[in-house]
Image (cartoon, rainbow, N blue to C red):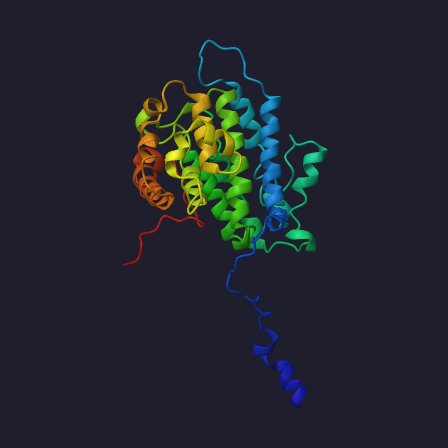
Length: 329
C-alpha cells in the first residue's frame, strides 16, 4: 500500500535534478604558471580558432585593383564567407559544436576547420555533454552579433558600433552558458585581443573607412573598448604611468604585454606627424595622474560618445538575450 502511494505521488516523480553547486568567485591566477588554467578552456580555444580562420580568409582574399584608394571591394568577398557560416542547419542540432557556426560546418571550411567546429563538446579537458535545446535555439540570435562585428560590407567601414557588436556576441555567449565567469580574463586578453588583431588586419588590408570617426578629436578612428580594458590592466602598475604612453620607447618595449600600449603603437604606425596633433584626445589623457582616473574617465566617455549616440546605436540589434526594455523604477 505504502509502495503504491509513493509511486502515485507526482511531486516525487517531477522532482528536479540537484542544482549545480554555486561558490563565491575567488582569485585563481596568482603566478605566471597559473595562466595555463584559463588557456585550457575549450570554448576559448574554439573562439580563438574561429578568429584564426577569419584571419586566414584575409590572406586568401587579397585586395583587388580599383580606382578608389579606400574601401577595397575584396572585403565583400571576404564578408560573404563569414555570412555563409553561421545559421546553417541550426535547427538540426543541439550540440555545443554549433554555438558559433550553426547547425553544420560552413561549406567554405576545409577539413581542418571542421575538426575545431565540431569540438564544442564541453569545457576543459573533462569532456562534454549535449547542450540543452535552448542553447541551440540561441544560435541564430547570437550569430547576428558576430556578423555585425566585422564591419559593414556595403559601406566597407568599421567603427565602435561594430566593436560593440562583438562585445554583445561575447555577452550572449556568457548568458547562454558557453562562456562563464572563470573565463573573464581569457575573454578579454585571449579572445578580444585576437579579435583586435583580425580587425586591424581587415582595416589595413581593405583600407576600410572609419565609421563615425571624429578625427583628431576622437579617441581612435576604430576602437574604444581596448582603451578601457587596457587602462584597467595598468591600474596600480609599479612603474608605468599615463604619461609614459606618449613615450615611443616605453610603448615599443611594453606593447606586447599591455593592451592600452598596443593600441597606442598601432595608432603611431598608422598615422604620421606629432602625436599631440593626430591624437589630441589621447595626448590630453596622458596628463591624467593615475590609471584608475583614466579608466573611470574612459568609461564615462564611452557611455557619452558611443552608447548614447544615435549614429552608433541606431545600427545595434536587440533580441531576447539583449532586449530593449525600459529600466524599472
